[in-house]
Each structure stands twice: as C-alpha cells, then as structure tokens.
Length: 135
Image (tube, rainbow, N blue to C red):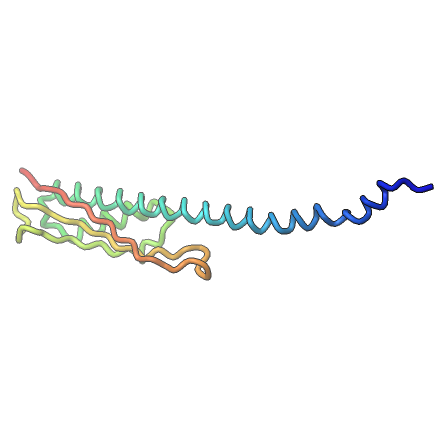
C-alpha cells in the first residue's frame, strides 16, 4: 500500500523551483533599479556640491578668475567616482561684469550614463547655482 500523499508530492516537486525562478527575475530587477536610482541621486548631489564650491571660489576671488573657478569645480567633482572629463563647467555674469557686488552664475553640465543603458535612456542633468559677490 502506498500513501496517497506521496504521489501528490511527486507531482508538485518542481513547483518551488519554478516560483523561485520567476521571482528571482523580479527581485534582481528591483535591486538594480534601486541601485540605479541611488547612483543618480549621488550624481546629482556631487554636481550640486561642485557648483556651490565653484560659486564660493568665484566670490572669494572676485569672480574674475573664470579658469580657476572651472578648475575648482572639476577638482571638487574629481573626488567622487565620476568621469571628470564629461563635466562641463561654465561661469557667467548675469549683471554684465565680474566687479563686486555683481552676481556670478556657475553651471555644470554632466551627461549621466546609466549602468543599464539598454533599459534606461541617458538623460542630461544640469545643475545651476548662483551667488552674489559682495566685497
């Protein structure tokens, strides 16, 4: 005599393997998207901090040192894990000149390339910061 339970277990032997295979795809997709979103937020934070550092440098040096401000922005962004050659800083003066107490605007443009480029389009992120120079 064979117990009836044994034949039922035999028919359901691959059920847990199939469920695991289906769920592992969902779990890895969610984990990769969370990682990608975290890296995107980190990139935005680095760019915003680099722009703020450039504005501070321009204020201290009376805004006339455009090349120095751009170098400071790239040096600050270089401490992160990003490709500094893809960062394009620009320094403009909305009021026309760099003499105090006029404003300075430092802009950083960085093309964000995701780790999963087949599923995500590569957006261009722009970060703006503006400071007022006062002597």
